[in-house]
Length: 246
Image (tube, rainbow, N blue to C red; front, side, top):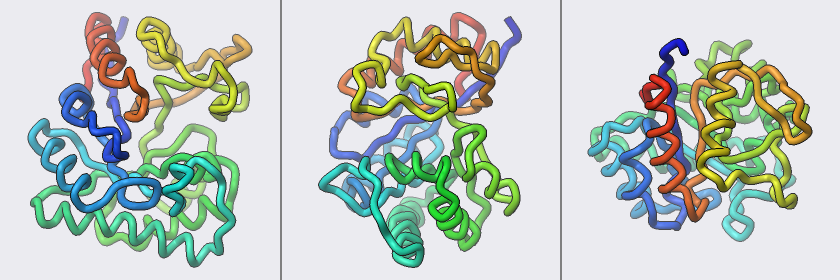
């Protein structure tokens, strides 16, 4: 196999409290910044951990919906959504400045992320926030999505993201969490899932179809109760194939 390097990212600061077991094994993290979870205390704690382990830091803005953990679509005027996303990112940036750390990327969370795959208004709002930022910050996006197209059109630097612990539909959307086969819990199955995407540049969907995909960073959800075990095993398994985590 050709030697590759990939990024592994994890969603953190979401109230689970397992960051110290996750951060040492990933190369980037997405910190909840007040929309679906997170406050100044949790953000600062994770920022310090990320700095200690030289992990790239990203903002993880969401619909402002703590009750539903940002996983339900919300009807919001574009201006209100823009303000909310901007404020969430600024919450983290303030702490980063105080801790002498840099914002590497932005990755929307939950329903906001999923809607930006197909919804032009949602995707445009996120892009407008990115354009308003003083420094060039990467945007984590799924392949063949509306937000990817708009980011490229607006010269926003992107990183293609795929999910290590989620199954895909044939249209590259994620299998709904309401279905029993949405999540991948087995470490060997996760490794095979990720390795296939790296090696073949395709993903095996829930129907067994092989669909082209691009992925530079792979996400494991931090609120998965087995997240620490899965990430550690995934990193080790990838290493056996000569794939570096950078």
